[in-house]
Amino acid sequence: MRVAIVTETWPPEINGVALTVQSLARGLAGLGHAVELVRPRQNGESDVGPTSAEGYDQVILPGAALPRYPGLRFGLPAHRALHRRWSQRRPDVLYIATEGPLGLTALGAARRLGLPACTGFHTRFDDFARHYGLGWLTPIVFAYLRRFHNRAAATLVPTTELADFLGAHGFRDVRLLRRAVDTELFDPARRDEALRAEWGLAPEDLAVIHVGRIAPEKNLELAVRAFRAVQQEQPRARLIIVGDGPARAGLAERHPDIIFRGLRRDEDLARHYASGDLFVFPSLTETFGNVTLEALACGVPVVAYDYGAAREHIHDSRAGTCVPLGDADAFVAAAMALATQIARDTNTSTSPLRLAARGTVAALSPASVSTHFADLLGTLALRRAA
Figure 1 (tube, one colour):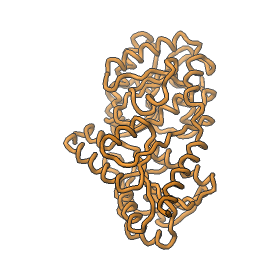
Figure 2 (figure 1 turned 135 degrees about the vertical axis):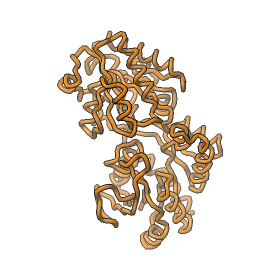
Figure 3 (figure 1 turned 90 degrees about the vertical axis):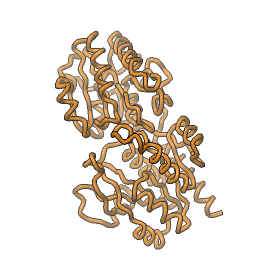
Figure 4 (figure 1 turned 45 degrees about the horizontal axis):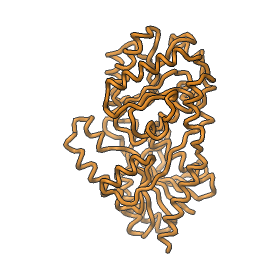
């Protein structure tokens, strides 16, 4: 097939959507499909126009910085440019990963040209509004998302929980496409005692770790609260936060003993995960939560709310704890209990807790997800052809 993928976020931007879409594009190209990636120009890119990279074409269009997130971009409307390009080089099927101006005009161009298109539901933007003092916008944003996705032939989601929720709220033809994790990159063997020593930790000390965007919607004050409770029992414990975002400066000012490691990528990111002992993930706004899979793949037990990736994959109590959604006291209690259990463990890459965490995601092959994705797209293309 010839597949066009439209996204408004892409590496080196670090977020779950960018990395998931990159994995899907690489997977399709690896299966022999012709992939065309349509995305906004990023900071430092001067040329606007077609390029080639990593086995697929890239169509780079104008974009702008996302307010309050200068490191992230969104695409400007491009209906005319996309209509002209796809009239000349017609894709068999489109995958539209984001609901911004570029995604919306791509969907409009596809409809006018009679191209089959599916969308990906990656982000609960309706939930984000609450965390930025715009709660009155929540029903309006959700109505927009429903209208956007219902204009496509299908909406792809990562969990059965989300598929059921959207189906019950008027989203049509919602289909499951599970997420994968690179278990070769994210591996317990990357644990690094020299890195832990930089954090001021001895081999037997506890490293509580969080990876993600440092922003209000991530509920990081609860991560700090859970850490403080753990610290009462294990005074040498340290909290390490990997990532960046608009809330970092305030959090660092209020808690100067937290170790902030900034943005990390690839092997360096995996090394940070694997050098932790307990992963705390208190976010209430995730559509999935890729970081949960990455932590588990590195053998790090997880405390998270009972939805998204945690509900889908944490079934062994040694691998982590799923807490009732919104119950902050239960989250803190779970972190304390799991920290105590970790302290009693052998705390090596082959310890029972690390092996249990690793085992929950060992079968999530990126190759199988890519094949399923290609099958879903092929079904839509054949349906439209018929």
